[in-house]
Length: 243
Image (cartoon, rainbow, N blue to C red):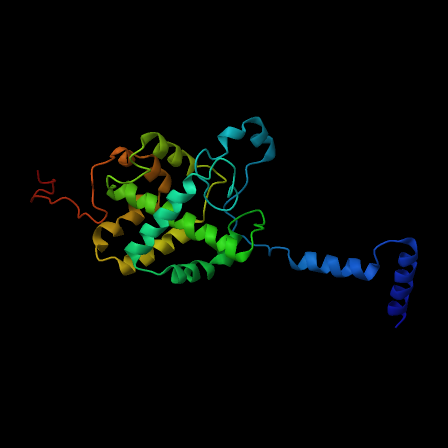
């Protein structure tokens, strides 16, 4: 009772002085504390230290495509958004999953996805889920095309200057999505696709060492009309590829 009365006295004094009442401040501070992200050991995507970024910002800033929430809506990267959405559409059609089911698939992983970023991500739930839906499918489809080829209508791989810039952007420290979501998309792909043999090699070729897949020579094989689920080449008895 004494504490309550002393608080009321303080509030009356603050009202007279024109200050924010103590009770209002406590309520506001409690709301801020409730918004704090929980501490977690799962951080794996970090921002570049400011002192390094200032010295050479171009080395840490994506040139053509944003991946993940950190550089989302950055000026100058808008042109790639259509390509990213188109790649997500390719993924949904091949895996035969509706947009609604895919949204739920990503949403149930939202908490874990947020925990992977060292800084608090301030996007609201729906916007964050949308970012991860599009960007995860885009990166996954890029890895698929690196491993299995592209058709002649591909607007990224058939423009060498563009695909080179995209590959470079995918390796930037801040321009990342958690690897586990790509593995989950792989499992979803494996369950749905009828050509499991070639798709199954994506894990060893692209998902376990994505930086090697992106830096490798596979992506220079452009415009060859390769079918996405093309079977591996036939071999003779000695194990060599048949001509």
